[in-house]
Image 1 (tube, rainbow, N blue to C red):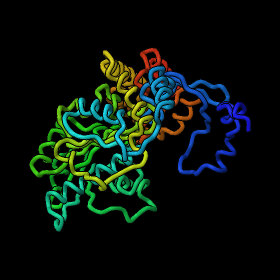
Image 2 (image 1 turned 180 degrees about the horizontal axis):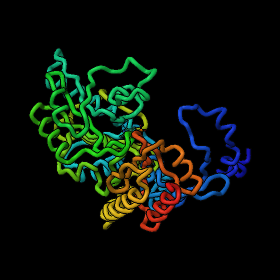
Image 3 (image 1 turned 90 degrees about the vertical axis):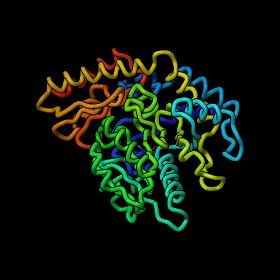
Image 4 (image 1 turned 120 degrees about the vertical axis):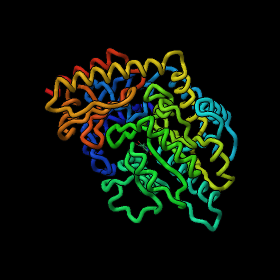
Length: 407
Ligand code: PLP
């Protein structure tokens, strides 16, 4: 076969909707759109239709599509060294871990490939912390999570996600999980017993409809964890990596967790996940207790380092905070202009939910027809996750489309 004939456009054109529907598993209710190209905050479908992409591939393409610094870093690393396994050191892992610990404080980083994998590693750290507390013969495996949490699709992640639509068909799950009400400290306090090893929370619940932990709630949770020697673990897979205009969403509350899960935006589109653990949990994994073939390849780390370069550049996160506040204000105005449809607008930075009175599905379809891609989330929410590089003109364009569609 002549490789010249295998251009990406001819490949994608041949992936028609009908072939897709025949051979790709049906675990998603996919939109009837085939996306083939992206640039900045925009993507194009196979018919040439242009869309403003306020999904960012579910909070992944933090720098938008085809950011020149990111593309150059990935291309350069692809020609240098792509994969070596975790049986050897690679210098990019060291550099990425160093730069992450500059943001978190002292500790260690473990690399993996996705949010669910980061969370599995975190749940294993909770078990090891429990064993250290109670001894080999003791039983200290309990993890307290939040009602309506979402932590991924693995067995650990599903066990921490008390939603029928996620768990149905997959039980029995892991035991030891219990669930408090978000922002109700007493409900968490009541669940703590001698079996409890950790409290595990999303700082901002994404899939459940952009529900924010109040700063005072997080301060109270930190205090409970200190009093009972529990690990405070934060899942920042969706809300971390600059999404709120802080590198981590918890920074706004002033607390420090014991461990953090991250993924999604970290690689800017290249799969990479990571766990940071502070002094309470950094040395719990010992050789052989956890591993991954792919986690933290030189190529994935190069992509992540390019993301950090941009996020760390002068004024970048401040701009996300300011533009995010502007977007929230404009969407609140929009909500007031459409009181028959909008219940509430809430969020932080470039992570915003518009809670509707009805099903967001038809609104999402109409927005797509009008050239704006957004997501739905639980609780009848339209979720906006613009790329962090989206400028005010693009935010204004999205608000104008929403205004037209919500009539
Ligand atoms: N945790 C949170 C908060 C998420 O939003 C997600 C995915 O949406 C996950 C974990 C799972 O991440 P992944 O899909 O990369 O496995």
